[in-house]
Amino acid sequence: MVLAGAQALGSLDPSLYKLCDADDDYDLPEGHIGRVWFAVEYERESEKLLVTLIKVKNLPSRTLGSPNGCDPFIKLYLLPDERRYLQSKFKKKTCNPKFDESFVFQVSNKALDERVLRLTVFDIDRHRRHQVVGHAHYPLKEHNYDSNERVVIWRDLEKELLETSSDKGEVNIGLCYNGNLERVSVSIYDGRNFKRQAFTTQDYYMKISLLYQGKVVKTKKTEIARKVQDAPVFNESFTFKLEKNSLDVSSVTIAAMQYFAGQKDKQVGRVVLGSFMFARGKELEHWNEMLSKERDQVSQWHVLT
Image (cartoon, rainbow, N blue to C red):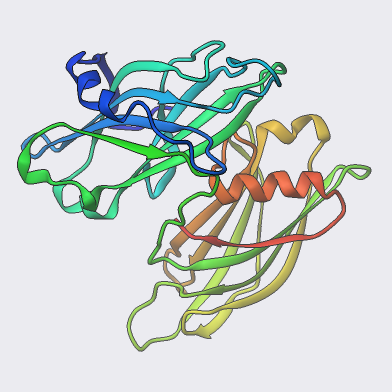
């Protein structure tokens, strides 16, 4: 999946290594899962954010007794957009990979302070599954744009994802999968902090769509919650036929809709739940927890994007 307005660039400037060599040897803190070095530069005139992946050190080895039991690669996101990313090359059998890769994101000057660069390190296991090792975040509001210089940064990887804020609101969603019946149940409970016009009430409903390989298979809607301020209540459940062999190529999109009588309805925001092919962060974790706790209802709050 390629981010619009972003692309890979040429190889790394070797002088960048000299800047980070001083930080190469360091004491490993408790629970350490790796450290990543990268460089950031912003070109105001062209509105391009240049990101250079330099290297990662001290990734955990998945093979006990082997110092190089890791096959890593990195995905780069520009939050709050978690559905599109850029990706590094794969490195084989190393816990200390060097990437020497550069990328560019197109981002306007006025949007910079609202964006967060996230680097997510993955390991490919023996079954070719992509396992998340950890994440590194760099809020762009911390960057000095006036210097026009490339700055080398390091971050220790963290297991937990950074919560990204949203002015669109949140929705409480329940998931349940029954493997015997091959059905997925989606429950929409309530919402909070929905975006609205000041001092007015709104009418909302939720639109739930099951997608197979990115194409809509079935769509259902809740009843309209009328004359609410910013916290609509729905408490409705919907069931979709979903075969076991289709789980990895399926997803569920939940869209919060503002209803207008006699006019076109407006989407407030949405949440995408599904496998690693379609979802990221809490949305992916929610989907995986549903599969690991078959027949149990698993509920979580999700930020609308």
